[in-house]
Image (tube, rainbow, N blue to C red; front, side):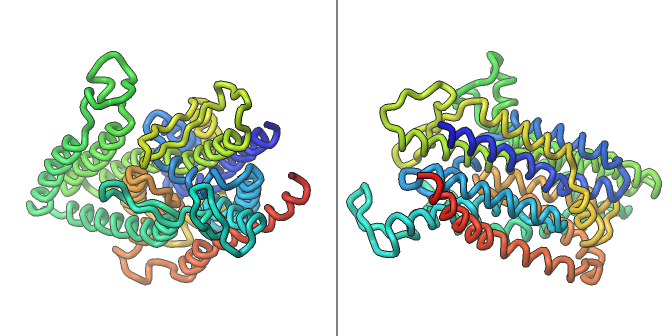
Length: 444
């Protein structure tokens, strides 16, 4: 029990570090464009980090919890993974490198699990509980096909989104920027496109709504409010709100003078940064929730017959057997509180890199980048894929820079960031493996 509590405390410390490490992702552009002071910006971001508690479900947490097969690992594996993730996060924060806290955690968890499998079984095959031959590398869930043709999961999919998440963010921000640029012109074409997009958005979001009869645990007695605040529905409402807000601005953009347009864009930046902070909180907090849930599941698996307190009532979902997941409310509440507190602590070194070193950012670019980043995070969270908020917003800022000219992006800085992204998972995995072997000497 002592080891489990230590893991939970360290996981929450990692969540706190994640908050100040990634605070720059949501606030760099609003600080760079002087929409908010640094102190106001971190308050703004922290509030929406915590608000994500009422918006998102546990899909990403489930994916992270299943990085390694919990029936074949022990608590030392998770402890080693968390320690390695904390060390790498602190090092990259100190150096001002906006690396991925998400991939640090995934790499640490997977690396420690592989080290455990090698330590226990060596490199030769062994007979698993299912009666088949297993190998050390199979302890990690590398790839699992999606149920009924759905999105596949596994570490390979997470690695793929190291490239895909910033690419999606870059394409989305580029298209949004082009849309805004055309909307500033006094022609009817962009307005027709905007109206059609608004109609398509309303139709699509309405088609995605879950009716009251299909909501498993309604939050209110009222059918209307239960539908509105269902975790699945509220994400789509937010998507609609973001797109319709930008659309409304596009319809009047051409009638505004330069001063009025800049003032309106600065107000919209508050909305776009809030939307991104919601996505940051919902995405990154769930990763720590997944680690804590995995730790509790491992503790239960390795302590058969021991009476478990209600606060340890954790069940990992299993789509193959139809088992529904159970997570006590203290886990998400603690994780969202920790990341919000971390955001309040700021991360000014990374703010400088994200807000000025990649490309010069104005209110116009800030709205486009943050809107694209937020939509990307909502999309990946819907698919239950843990992605890097750092990679996502960096890609979005690059996409904005490309609308001016290719040389507007400082590619020297960008290439350095990409190297940090590529190295994060393997370095975290190797570090976690070493930490595991050291801990195994002292913890039986």
